[in-house]
Length: 52
Image 1 (cartoon, rainbow, N blue to C red):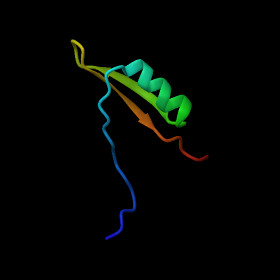
Image 2 (spheres, rainbow, N blue to C red):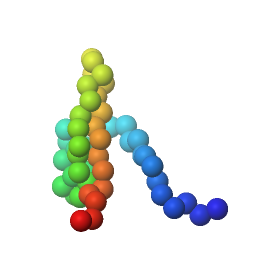
Image 3 (cartoon, rainbow, N blue to C red):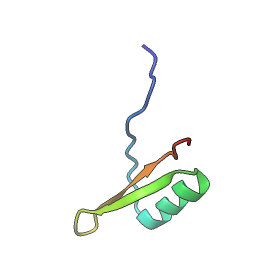
């Protein structure tokens, strides 16, 4: 069976702000939010931009 769509990919990183810059500036993804889980655990939502 051929894959038609990828729903999510989770990539753990150590430096969240630096990673967001890389994924948005270098790969063209769009960061749509950062969620803080308390302590040192945070994560962000990054998506490929949608075509208009």
